[in-house]
Length: 188
Image 1 (cartoon, rainbow, N blue to C red):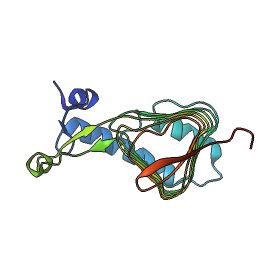
Image 2 (tube, helix red, strand yellow):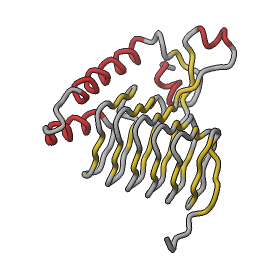
Image 3 (cartoon, rainbow, N blue to C red):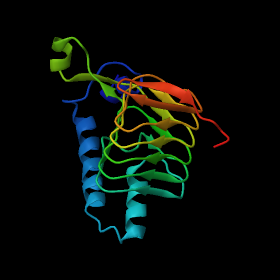
Image 4 (cartoon, helix red, strand yellow):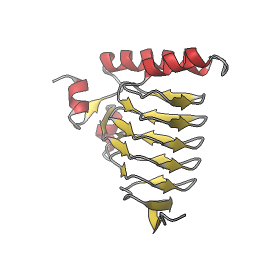
C-alpha cells in the first residue's frame, strides 16, 4: 500500500519522507505562490488559478491572498464562498465547505494530526481526518478547526475559537475549546 493510500484510509502514513507526496505538495505550493503574487485586479486569472488549485469549486468563489494549502485536490468549496486574507488549509484529508461560507482572516483548517508517541512522530508519521462545513457558516477571524470536525448548517463560529469537536446546526459557538453557546434565533 502506498503512503497516499494509507493517508486516504485514515492510517498513519509517512508525510515527511515520501517522495510522491512531497512532489504533490511542492507542485501545489508553486501554484499557491503564483496565486498569492497575482495582482488583485487580475480577477479572471485569479479565478482560473484557484480553480486549478482546488479539487472542486462552484462559480462564485473568492479567496484573498495569502492562501496556502498542502495538496489542493482535497478541498471542495460551494457557491458564494469567501475566504479572507492569510488562511491555511492543511488538506491531507478532505475539507468540504458548503454554500454561503464566509471565513475571516487568519483562519486555519487542519486535517493533519501527529502521534502522541514521539518515536512514531519523529519518523515523520501523521494521520489525516476530514473536515466538513455545512451551508451558511460564518467564521470570525483567527479560528482554527482541527482534524475530524464537522460543522453544521447555519452556524457562526466566534473569532479566536479553536474548534476541537463537532458543532450542530443553527448554533453560535465560540471559545477555546469552541463550544455551542446558544441556538440561532431564526427570526433575527
